[in-house]
Image (tube, rainbow, N blue to C red; front, side, top):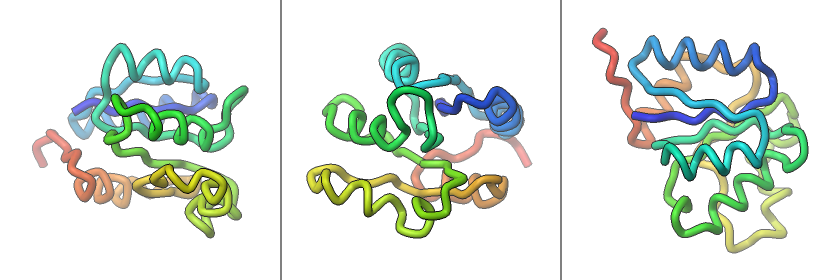
Length: 132
């Protein structure tokens, strides 16, 4: 199973990549919306973890772009944020102006709970392949 981590903080990318690879996932990374779209096109991930605060196009804008493209609309999207206001309303305030767009499959606050992330990945149909 392939997971794309979209975050401009190299420490977060390294942490998540290492953890997820240890769990048996194949992990790709992108530091901004533009490179994320190119990576989605190239690798066709099974799930995308998107930081809300990205340089250039925000993670919320990236979510809208992915959801509106029929090729990518079905990919599970998990948002990651340090912004409590986004976390509290699961992005509904932002997505209110995009009524035709399905929201994220889950929203995590930073720092993420590893066990909760694995549970969410299983729940959205992206199980770990690591042997426990």
